[in-house]
Length: 253
Length: 350
Image 1 (cartoon, one colour):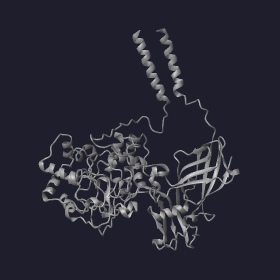
Image 2 (cartoon, one colour):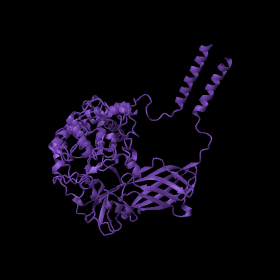
Image 3 (cartoon, helix red, strand yellow):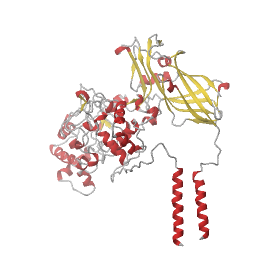
Image 4 (cartoon, helix red, strand yellow):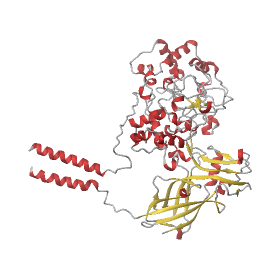
């Protein structure tokens, strides 16, 4: 019995150490931060909501009141490595400067590609009430036909015969032939600018998004001023706006 | 000696538990509040739901009760007059009793007949056109609709946050007084999703607890041969969308599922409704145009239009019925009324 008296307290002490130990065998890889920043532009000039005046490819003047889009499932990759952001949903909103950039952790490696989806992946469109960037409060969720508005542009154009010359594009639809989800894989421009993540440092990717690209292929405010349901027009505009991104700079620290 | 060992062992076990507990990460949630888990029971012989609507919404008594209070609360509507329960009345199996269209904000009519609410856990797509793909996001539609509750989610949340009770009810359900749209919607889903109607006379007959009358049995036999293909037992719907030969209402121009899918092949297709509690959910069809069960039977036997291109293939020859068939069918359909459900105190106004 003496033995038990000695062993039990020892066991208890041991347990106290063991129970709180966090998977200590594998050394944690060195990690840094990727920061991605979007600048919304129109043909190279900064997008200015409400007061900016622009001209589309068919010569129609327009201005923009709202411009926002989802960027999700973000990762940086190289041939044999990947750093994928967890719970990766961002609403880039021109009216909210804080929304224009986001950061996530990546192992200290060199990466050649930036990958993301424009929009919200189909699974989250069918998974019930979400929160954060996906909260329906963000006015990017259709209540009549469940699903996210992946990208939204509202404004005016004298060419539009709609009430108050409105132009309004709510681009959505996550399944079927008119699925507007676009996977974007951007090759980081040149070798010297590949993304190099170093331990405890932040490296940055800067991206321009050109509103003008929405209206490529002769989208006209006279004939197509409104698109607020999934369908062929939404698909056509998504096929256009998937070309709006250009990486302008990669800054390694 | 034995006692001493027992005490030692007991102390060891107790200490182990305390230490292990201490290592669990303490989340933002308040550990002082304890929730009571609820189990969702599938009635004997019923199929498993295709997807588990509670997969990311663990059922608790506190969540259910919060959802119940929200369901009956006018605060979810712009002027306070239109809680969910204004169109979904328990005594009518949560349809609007005796209304083709329901009433909404500013003396507006709705544009479709309010369906009964029960067995929603087995319903993958909600609304007559199937536009809603998850029970948690359904309430966003009537809350925002200008002719229904006419309110914004922002305002609803603001009202709940300044209410004297809700912060505590959210805390009881979720461990924190923080109120957001996700918590509100998940609580509503707990209340609505656990409404199960499975105690009609029909169910009792299936369980061997009751017997059909001769007329009911004849109606059931007729039902099995002519109606079961779409109104599949035990839910009495196959959850499909079909055109059952109704003329287009020129006021509404409602083309049903086509609005959601953009497919002309879906024109004039509407969700096959469950026939459970059908006696209580009159008037019938997506626009409530048929007032009585007899009117519906007359529709299928003689009145339905057979010229629409998307008419369901099962209805091209209508469904011939004698007067006796119809009488028997009405007798059978009445056995689908579940007063245990319509009087269940758990679903009553709190």
